[in-house]
Image (cartoon, rainbow, N blue to C red; front, side, top):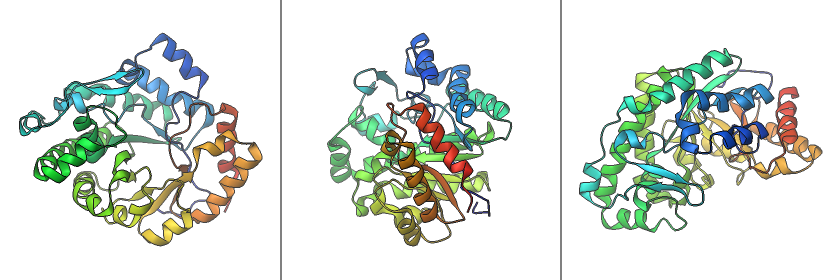
Length: 333
């Protein structure tokens, strides 16, 4: 909200997960990612692991951006080698027509996990929900999984733009309701991840990403005023002004732009989050301290949430993560 505070609040993207030994042990007992993320008690426990260890100021639900897709009639699996694999790639109007309104009964475990987390955290930190944004979710659906070229969705964009827009609108309407659903279950802020929108040219971002981000933002703001929304786009440095124009409250900035330059570009009505390179956490404690202090100074004394510019790397030493959080907590403007 941009209120005066003595230091920036801090949390990390992917702070619950593979770099923690306690998570690795739990994963041996429950090897399926979907079981871990779609069983309320397990998802809540994993979410709380870094909270207990490091006391971040934000605790983000352990989940996946694809989690609500089966509730829209879009099935997927997680292959240990390939990552997400969609049950059927969306390619035709008939495929788009099969996408349904969100069936909340199929995502009740998300609400249950958030309620557990909110109760356990007891307002010692903010409980954060998250959703995938329409362009990124549509990319998975059309590509049939992960992609390095994004050729299928871009072919649809340039040959059948109205078909893609219809899919994006359907997803956006569902994701807006999914975000509200998370807020009603206890989320005090929600982050929108549009990971692959950074592969779009600015003109195509304006057509295929921004309007559907804005649909979600406007719907949630109208339905649940006062709940902050954060928008993160990996490799989104060229899109910062356009991201700000969506009406978002906070922009997640990656490390490819200095935070003070980002603030000049987006103005003072939008807060910032970020933006340390996750690889810095592989360095020495002295290097981590220097980089943390530099980023805090660039972020300014109001409206900066400290975070990484992307998710924490799985090979990151836990002691370096602890030092990272301690350094931010001990800082004073």
